[in-house]
Length: 422
Image 1: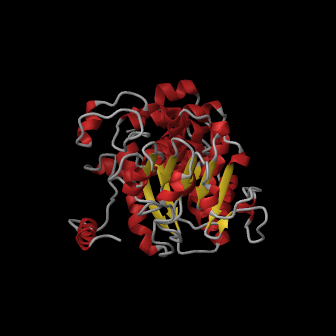
Image 2: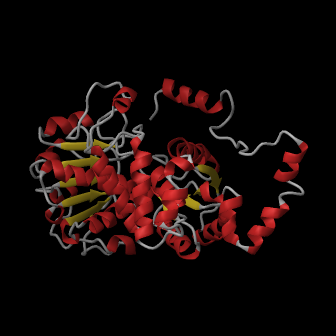
Image 3: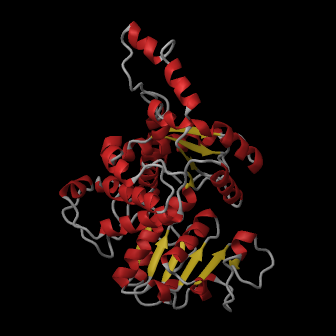
C-alpha cells in the first residue's frame, strides 16, 4: 500500500496543472488559411484517395506507422486486480507516456468495457486500422492467451500482450546474465517458477526458447506444484505440469538454481533460499512487494543473485526496459508481428548491454559514482539512453531476418533508423 504522503503526491501529480498525463499535438503547420486547407478540406482528399487506392500509403500520409494502441479491459491491473475499464485509464495513460518518452512512439490508451473475450476481440479488430501496432495490457488470464493469439492470427500488425512477453524478455535477460555470473549452463539449470498466470507462462516459454530443458522446470500455483497428478489444471498449465515427486514450493526449491516469483508477497522464506544450489538466482517480482524482502534475501545467502520489480533495490526487472524498444524495432521495419525471434533478440541485446562499460550519463542519472556488471547490476538501468540504439535495432534486424518485416535491411538503414524516428 502507498503511504498517505505518497498517495496524495500521486493524486496531485495526476491532477495538476492539467488532468491526466498525455495530450495530442499537431505535427504540421496550421497558421495560414492555405495550411488549413491542406490539413483538412479540401486538401485532405488527396491522401484519402491515395490510401483508398493503396492501403500501404497510410504509412506515408498518416501517423499509423508510429502509433500504438494501448488497449485493456482493466481485468488485471498491476497489483490491484479487476478494477474495470475506466479505473485502468491512469495506468494506460502512463504506458502511453512511457512509449513516447523512451522510444518516441505515439500511443492512444483505449479502455474497452468488455470482459467477454469474443466481444473484446471484435472491438479491437474494429479499431485496428488506426494503429501500426497494438499493446495489450492488464487483461486477466486465461482470457489473455486467447485474445492475444486470435488478434495475432487475424490482424496484419504487431500484437503483444506486454504483461506476458515484455516481462519475459526482461526476465530472460536477467537469467542470461545470472547464469553468466553463477557460471552455470542453461541446459542443466533447475528452475522453480511460483505463479502460473500470464507472465509466468510467457517466461517459461521463452526460457525453453533459450535452451532450458522442460523437465528442469517446476511450476507452482496457489495450490502447490503444478503436477501431472492434478486434475484441476487448465490447458495452459497442463502443458507445463511436472512428474517430479514434489507437492510444495519448499520441496521444489531444494537444489534449484533459479527461483522466479510472479505471485505474491512474502511467500519465499530465507530457509527455502538456503536449500537452493550454490549461487542461487532469485527473481522475486511480485508487485508491489516481492516474494521475499531484499534484506531477508541478502542475509539468507552471501552468494545470492537477487532481483525484484522495485526501483529502490538493485536489479529492477522493469518492463520499460523492453516494450518501448520492442515496438520501436517492430514499427521501424513495418513488421507484421512480434515473434519469438524478435523477443529473443531483445533479451540478448539487454543482456549484452549490461556487460558493457556504463557511461557517466547513466551514473549521474542515478546519483552513483561507479557500477559494473555483476551481482548488483544484472540488467541495464531504465534511464540508460543506449537502450534505444541497442535493443530496437536488434529487434528490427530479427524481424528482417525472420521474414516478418515489410522494410528491407537496406531501406531500414537508409530511411528508418531509430534516430530518424524520434
